[in-house]
Length: 178
Image (cartoon, rainbow, N blue to C red; front, side, top):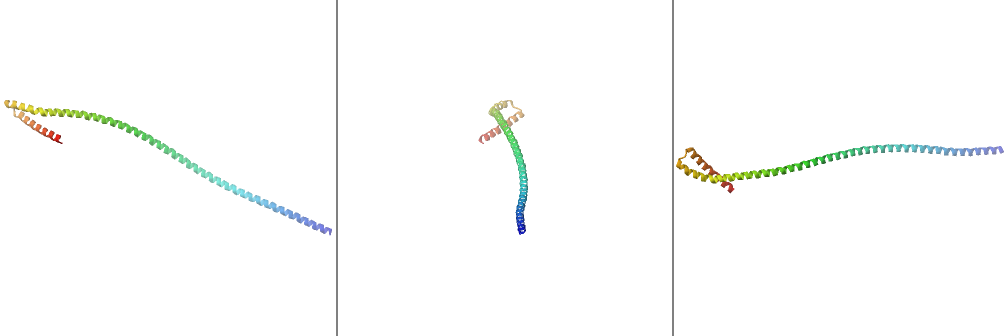
């Protein structure tokens, strides 16, 4: 009986040891499972992080390219504006020079106009004097010629000149009336 009891005790002890080993193995299996799950999760997280990092880097490169393009466009626009500003300044300078030349031309034309007005006035005065004096001289010459009996050519010239004088007087009267 004692051996039975010892045998039962041994079996119970072995059962306890087996149960204890079984529990321990379950815990170790669970730990291994958790560790494996943890490794998989960590790997998945690392892979996801790498993908996110790669996407972020690609977006950053795209943004950098767009930024470089925008900077280049701004530089080109600034250069174009500077060129247009210089062209505008040059055009303004040319305009001012033309205005000065134009003013000088206008002054010169004013002087020329005054010169010709003066010349015309003097010519008109001379012509008016001739118009007023020639008839008197013609009358004097005519009275002197009737005594001498002038040639027909001179008489025709004097008659033609009288006719021209009448026409000039009429033109001057019409010009004064207008």
